[in-house]
Image 1 (cartoon, rainbow, N blue to C red):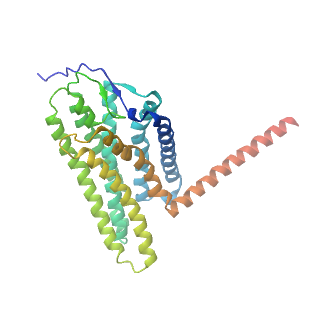
Image 2 (cartoon, rainbow, N blue to C red):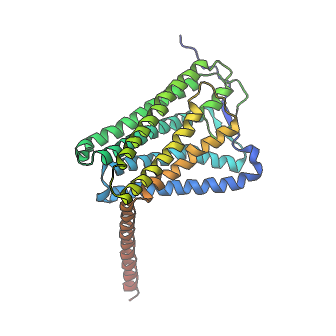
Image 3 (tube, rainbow, N blue to C red):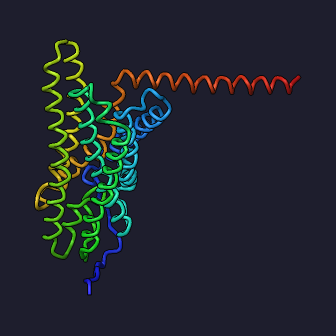
Length: 328
């Protein structure tokens, strides 16, 4: 017979940033502003890419999926963080905690795969521009996106299942702002050695492999850019790729420092600061770096805005004409 989960803890208490009581209001305003900007920026990308035919290319298809993912990824943790800052401590049930853990791991892993796919797409576009339309065709794009999502879905199951099978006998206070792997393992009153080793191996497989694939793509891109005769062309490409690489490095660097080690050795406050980068900051930076600095995308935004304003203007004129007719 399989061992049953003998957990006596039915809910957890998320402590959040309780050591910064005097900064709670300021942190709430900052995180709320970042969250609103993140949702707005990513929704704009999804809308504009879907409505502008010129953006129906592999790069923007991947970007649209990344933006859709970022909306849910940041919504997995930030709303609970905001509620925690308002109430100075937030209770969460055991099942809700495991659900949050699953979606966090699943969406985080999917983002790693999508970033690697996007880097590979840029590598083909810059290093093999003539063969690019044949190499990165729509069927391949669809398959790469599907593999990224399905692999992420599968990656989330094992850590969540293993954590849910641990015994939690008390205390039930999670010294974090969401249900994350290290603080949950610290709370367990059963042996977590197998769980730690499994998560370590899984982190190596997902984070490090995706990071080195992404980094390798950008190394080949940079070497190809160095052969561009135009100084302005080199500068522009270096600026774009440098921005992409900076965001990717921040995301992977903070994630690797948290999960690619055999034991949760970092201090809780350090964990929280590191976690803010990959749960709050990078979802905001991705739409800015990947789209809002792009000339074609900015032109598409202006085109969609003019179209929307034109529709609203026609509706306003029509309603005023109808009201005027009725008054006559």
